[in-house]
Amino acid sequence: MKDKIERCLEEGQKGDRHKGIRKVRPNQNRAEEHLCKAVHNFEAIDFFKQGNFSDWCAPAGFYALYHLLLAILAKKGYESRNQSCTFALLEKQLNKIHPHDPNFIIAQSELKAIFDQDISHDLEHSSKILDIREKYQYSTRMMFEEKEFVEFKARIKTLFDKIRGELERLP
Image (cartoon, rainbow, N blue to C red; front, side, top):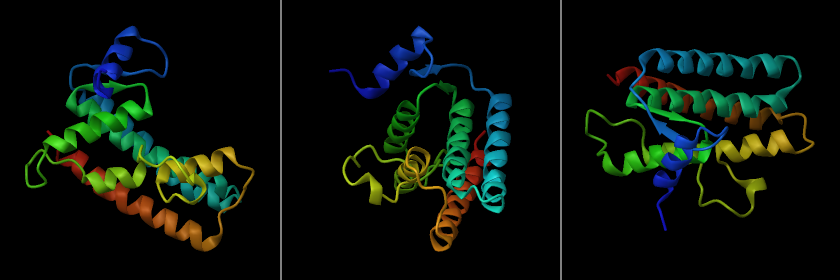
C-alpha cells in the first residue's frame, strides 16, 4: 500500500479539486498571500464574537492556522488542495526535522493540537482545533460559552504566533 504522501502527490498531479498536493517552486508571494488570509481570518474571530455569531469563530480560528500552514508549504515548494494531505506532509517533514535544526517549523504536538487523524471517537469532546471547528460548523450550536470562547481564542493566538514566527524565520 502506498503511503499517504505518495497518494497525495499522485492525486495532486490529476488537478482535481480538493485532492492532493503538488510539488511546485517555492513561492514567497503565495506564502505572503496565505499570511494575509491567516491574519484576516484571525481578525474575523473578534468580528464574529462581537456580532453574536460566535459559532463562526471556530472555523475562522481553524482557517487562520491552516493558512499559516499553507504559507509554510508554499515557502517549501508545495501547493495543497486537501487538508489531510497538508497535515500528512507537515507531519512527515516534522518526523525528519530535529527541533534544534534551523529548519524546524513547528512541534509535532502543536500540529496535533490542530489536527490529529488518530482521533476517531468521541469527536464531540475532542479538544483538537479541527474537531472544534467541525462541531460548530456542522452542529446546531450557535454560540460559544464565554469561558470556552476565551480558552479557544487563547489557544488559537498562541499557535498563531508560534507558527507565524516560524514562517517568518523560514528562508
